[in-house]
Length: 137
Image 1 (cartoon, rainbow, N blue to C red):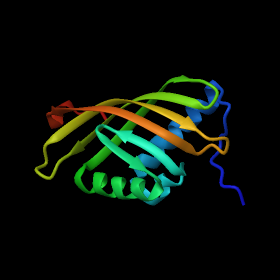
Image 2 (cartoon, rainbow, N blue to C red):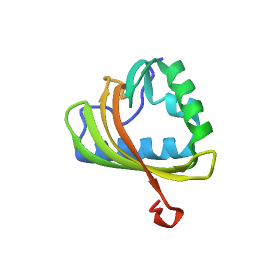
Image 3 (spheres, one colour):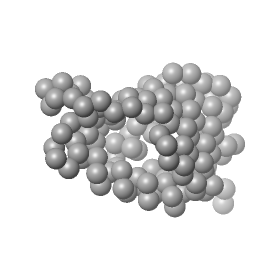
Image 4 (cartoon, helix red, strand yellow):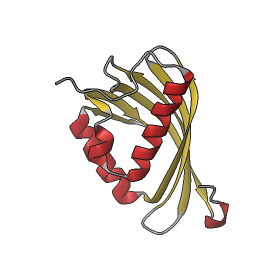
């Protein structure tokens, strides 16, 4: 059986927004295995300065991420789309082990295969220390 993740490319504005919302919901659920199912088996990532290849590495990366980024809350926004590519801007907030708050800002470029699985994800992210009173999410 062919593995698919709807909606499939080519994207319309509506289906691109749907893909973005599905990603936001999945990441906010913080289940590394569930999140990894949106990616192709041989997915390629660049996340900040890390290079991640394949679903197994995605799961390991996300387990480590959510073990250290507590109170994680993410918001994604569609920026642009084409046939099988989507660009998003995002921000998320979290606390570290000391309880200090941070907001991360970034952009992601996504490329999907014909089955709607993300085969490439390139993320540029910056973290800013914030006060708890400055939280937006």
